[in-house]
Length: 240
Image 1: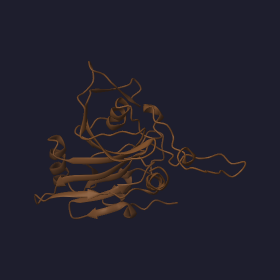
Image 2: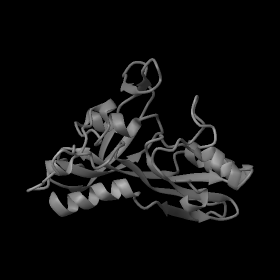
Image 3: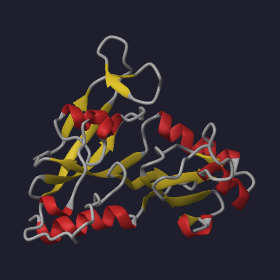
């Protein structure tokens, strides 16, 4: 199936394109990967001067801001620098948790090969995330995550510290989610193996709030993609 950049767009004006990034698509070109497929390449093919204002992990879906000109890029970069941009993520985590404005303030350092991070109180860089429970289910919780800083894998490692690892995130202790684990009278066809409900880290960038060049502070939202939506709908149906 060919991905069409136009299908990702949730908002566009003369300065910005806001997209709902699908999962499994890298923000920037990856080494040794298919050079034709990254958000940056697709954005530049759509608008020659496009610049990504921030990044999302390859597996993470959700809202991304892309600037259409250098002035718009600078305008948003300054807001990111001054922590004036509000980012809200939704995550499905293992376990039942009651978070109400819980702040995790733990420094993060990359692990040697750069593919993961750890908490390091000596060499780590300052990192803070705020967590709120949106809905608790049987054995799972839908959590809102508001990163104050923007470190790599920040939300994932901070949730691990709260003993609430994200579903399907083995790097940080998250276990896969199976329908059979919470649907009573679950029957699997003979001779078939049950597949997890989601095949990637269950993290979605839900909204981004920042001031447009005219000074108007605006919130942009990205609906759940199909895989994340399935998890939440099944939990609503069978795990309350």
